[in-house]
Image (cartoon, rainbow, N blue to C red):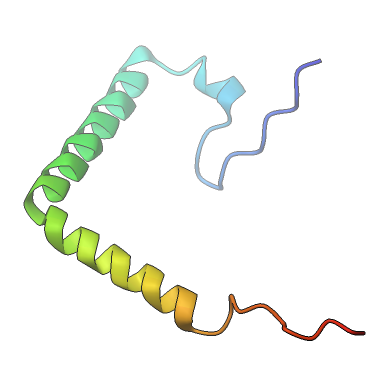
Length: 76
């Protein structure tokens, strides 16, 4: 049995109606996807060290903020 497809966010066509869209729209969507993918690669190449340090610092802060500490006494 095939699962029901989720509803698209407001403003986006549903998958069933997008099949009837002109091929040009699909090509435009793919072009935008490729552009964003290339942009992500360029940002990563230029700022890789800073992004890694920022990510590491965010992870360190998330682990030390007390939200992830275990309760020592679980006698209840």
